[in-house]
Image 1 (cartoon, rainbow, N blue to C red):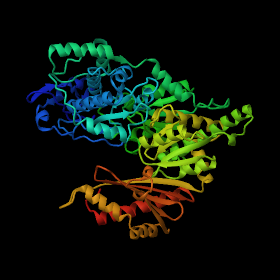
Image 2: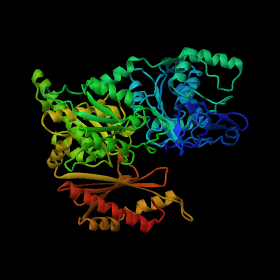
Image 3: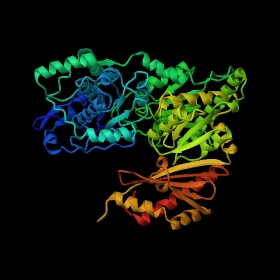
Length: 636
């Protein structure tokens, strides 16, 4: 029986009514328990609620690490046409105030969207509201991976990029990611300003449901300029239509090819003796396939197979209800197929294709699902090898030595382990640390490139399988990372090595097997305390010397020091996070959520072999779980 999701809600003007949602045309026929075909088109409806306008003048959505994100629903703290419309109206006001009418009309905004519920509706609504303010909009005519929005901002000269997506969250979520004119995720300066403009903006009012339910409907908006869902007078409708037709245009078709070329141009030609490795790829019901598959083909890979059940966009995520490929559960289908077909490399992108998960055959006859730390080390190894090879050749032609030219650099976060840093040291590269999130990672990469010109940042990444290679996309990009890792696998295959062989070599080169794991806890409220208060108290407890000694004792190590990032003298690394150092190569890092009752533990170690390292990680995870249970029985 295929999964059937519950109806999703949206809002509109006027009293409460029920209307059939044409967005359900995205749904496939589903099999019920009796095996008969049950078409769900008429079973999905939207609730149109007036009360949000009268009751909820307060803006209740907040910016997270990458824009705004929440569950779909009819409330002021949920994602729906009214809240997203108010969000866009606030963005429009900020753009006009910051850049002026002339720049907004000339440079404007680029808009993309994934295949989630209502993403195309929100994109069409956003385009209509922005162009109604004489702000030009270039909109993608097809479902769009998030990295392509980050890429498009600069060649199109846009002031801002908007991508309507909720990345790897479950089906009931949506939201919007924002990119500044430099192509980097909107930083605190932009989001703090928007947090003032959005609450002062008005909700749009609707006379009928938004039903721009697929890219074809978005293309019709480009062609006709008609957005007839807004509750405006006939004269205003005519003026809005005229402005849409004047200021709305599709993103040039050439941009997708330019994006792929920006990736392939950084990949070395394969050795003459290179083998065509076999690859298995899944798009996790998202937007990645239409870009990943052509790119791999252009790079010469011909043995590429896909997970058929997950290759097409589907907002239900029927085979992966929690479509985060960092999770082993989400990777079940692709790994089952890998066990049958035995590819050399397994690649998986999340629904908006900005994250990459990797699995490779190991020496135990299984497929090893790499951590983001391991993938980062392999990627930097490949990039640094080819950087020095290219630099040496260039230096010879200019009568300079490679060491007299620029120095390669790695950027990682404070909760990313030291494996890639150790690999970077082998290549005489420098490593810079920053806070979690790619608005920080890409900003540091940009600073290295622009302000410290003797450094060339080859890779920026974090343990949560996000990787930024080079400068074309100033955000994490699962498509680019997948292409580079496939190229690495092919290069090593020409030398008779698998990626697992190279992983073993890198571990040996850097002192032993590097293992890492993440443990996360969410806390329920207790009498007199919120869940967040409980999580914050637990965070303080883990900063105490007694807990440090307890963790050290359970793995036979000494408690060496505690890095409290809240006490950092400079603002660049100042945050509520800590790292407990146990022995020489074992770390327990912890970081609470800024807005939710959650606490995450990032554990890493180096052992004499894989089994020893993984065992130490398991012991620490168990001990942490005991401490959490003793202190906060509601944590889970």
